[in-house]
Length: 493
Ligand SMILES: [Zn+2]
Image 1 (cartoon, helix red, strand yellow):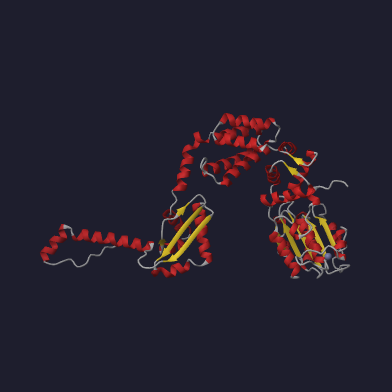
Image 2: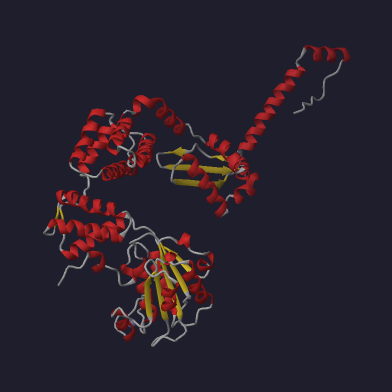
């Protein structure tokens, strides 16, 4: 039997086989089970993440005579068997990119008003629907406006922005997500074990998945490419890097540390070493960015500070954009790397300032910031106070906040989920942390709000001022002359 590419062989055939799109497959399976079927569906998202597969799985289940408990087609009824042959009379599929004319669409939906030859529905799947010509769209739109009871359209597109509002408004829309690295790694592991493919190390699997950049199909295509190079089914790092033109992880890591440690000479020599291995420049830069990202993600900021790594990632990412398309990309990128390595001499001042700016954020500075962004929330917080100082760590902030009994109404205001979520969001952005614990409590006894404390301070200042006035010689003298005492002092704001 001839070799079947992995992406095709492992194409999902049931809802649960689809990688990383549970939010969509569950809705569609439920729609089938509850028999709540619309006339038009739009599946959108980047290439190779399962839109067409989902369209087919859904179409098959829609026409199945004995749908299973999980919403999938049975695979054995007459309708399923007809579907499996690939030329069902009742499921029509075209690629909008290559069949985008009016005539193509007229041909496709010419029989739209005839009942299906069997079963309830006649289904039309149009892939890359945004590629249809305007005239073709208009033909389609007429049917879409008043679809016959038995007709269901399933559109797939990588570019929903190009679709007319009139089309969008008639479709139930499902946005596909990029597959996560973890999803891809698990999927490749599963395929590897079923196909008897061995990897020298888990690093190789991860590298293939990273190169797949969120697309299941691209990942499997890369795996095919590696396997065709491997000869047998053992994938070594050597095979991986040669077949995909990738940079060795260890070599890239070496380059990254040379750069981080500010060793310009070492940085250049490691970079040139990679170029000498004929690794495409773009792959070197990609791999380097991935390594820096991983370092940031691991979150160990003892040796290199977070602002420093952010700056490196951002600069490398921006500079490579123009560097790679410049007149002399190799040289430009070498200069960029040297610049990054030399950052301490250029920017010591800047980096330190950024760090101290991060450290200086306090509850007080937050309130001052909040009053500009959301005066209502800020003045609400004025009616309470911190129970104890905030705890601010690398990735989290803990706030215990209390209200005096007299501020019960403000305490209650903050119990509203939406208002609280809003405040937590402000905290996240301001303190640049992802985890916030914000607890509120109604305090007893003498607990004072910020407003109380301020009022108290103002009162004290005014009292002192009054006392000072009473003690001035001229007042004393006046009191002596009239043989009396000053009763009250009023101070205007
Ligand atoms: Zn069936």
